[in-house]
Image 1 (cartoon, rainbow, N blue to C red):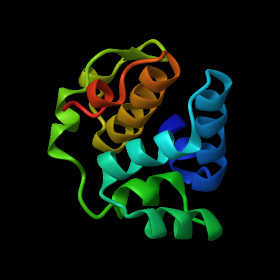
Image 2 (cartoon, rainbow, N blue to C red):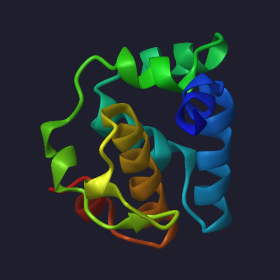
Image 3 (cartoon, helix red, strand yellow):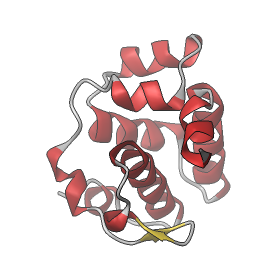
Length: 116
C-alpha cells in the first residue's frame, strides 16, 4: 500500500527533490541527470521530455529503455533500508536512484557512483 503512493508520485516532483538534495551539497543538476541516464538508459532529451509531462515515478522506471546491468553493484543503506535487500523490484530501482544521489551529495567521485 505504501509503495503504491510512491509509485503514483509525479516524477518531475521527485526529480526536483533529488536535484535540490544534490545542489545543497554543491553538486549539479547535470550530475543528477548523468546518474539517471546511467541507471535507466534514458537519453537527455527523453529525460527532459519526462519532466514536461505528467509521468508517475513508477511508470518512469517501468518504461525505462534499458536499466543498467551494473545497478546490481549498488549496495548500502538509504532511508534505513539496505537497497540490495529490497524485495519489490520496482521499489528496489527507486532505492537504487536514492542511493546514487545520496552518494553524489556526500561528495563521492562520479566514476565510483557509476560503478566504473
